[in-house]
Image (cartoon, rainbow, N blue to C red; front, top):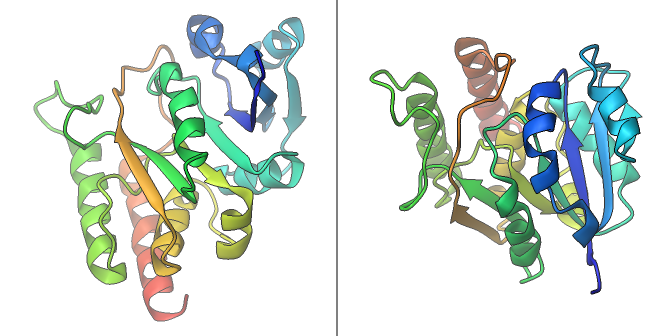
Length: 227
């Protein structure tokens, strides 16, 4: 069977628990190119890659935004999909993202807020992240005439040409929000489909809600007035 002509990028930073749980569900044998980007895990993540024959690139400048830019410099294919093996993202949706990218979409986002989707906070009484994500998405839709349901989720695919055109310069967790905004501003074809977000396997998320929220406010201002 021919492999999918695309590149899967695994993003990690001390995610050994997640890797042990989901790696055998990642369709690495069905994708033409698979590599990881890591800023220097110390919990056995890098050793896990070595043991399982996964090429990894050491990220000297920390930040999720830098990881995205490294990925597109290194990827040899036009269709690039990002996956974080922390337990939240469903590995069964990886091939779906490649499929939708192959249907002439510039960007594909696995949405946690569409009908049939699930956010990992849905079973909680106070849904801080869900409220924040939906609020920022709604504001972005109003400012940039979009129709997205989840502009922030990092589980997505982007065509290399589209990424180079929007040329995002955001750092840390603002990279996904900025790519969504600039894709809307450029009238690119964005496709969303529902995904089921599960609980993390181990460790805590490095995305702090209020700190990230301040970054998103800054991005909105920058993109509206200067971008």
